[in-house]
Image (cartoon, rainbow, N blue to C red):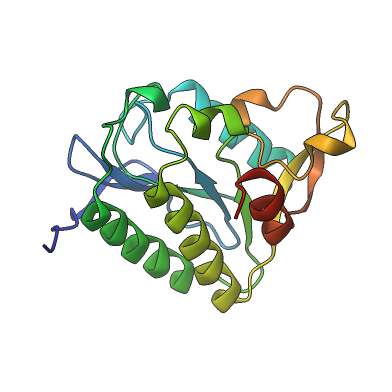
Amino acid sequence: MTIAIPEIQENGNRYQRDDGACRYELGVTGARSPLLWVGLNPSTGGVYGNDPTMREVEKLTTAAGSDGWILVNLYPRRSKRPKDLPRVLSDDLAQSNLSVIRNALSAVPASSRVVYAWGVDSALNALGRREVMKRSMVAVDEIVNRAGLPRMRMERSNASTDMLPTPWHPLHAAGCLTPFTDMEFRAYLDRRMGR
């Protein structure tokens, strides 16, 4: 089944692809070298108002010296808490989401960076490590790899080595160092997701 992707909505210097239940993409217009953030799923923020995650993304993007940001997610369904997502995730919705991510990455310059920021494993465990999420992670990483953009993550200064590599969520940025460090996705997938 093909899912229609919403048209871009703009307000001021922000744009989004959002149909109310799902937000596929949110960003700042006119950025020459944006950071592309990959979260788990969207919460309540959008072009008409910030949520706590968006405020942190803006702050961390500025601290990293970038002139803008684009926020996408592994799964586009809005939910304040990942554990409240539907028990069965839609493959069709995930595929439509990947199409938006592919298009977003094709439009950013080669000087852009991608920040994996979907959070610690407990967020994924709340989802029961659903295969749809794991497939989305692998597919996003393949898209980023094909685009030739560096994969980054925030590194916590107080994290033990057995916790790494973790794609920390922006709301858990306290104690994180900037600029970002390389994200070793395959090591993450092997160690944290039991590939």
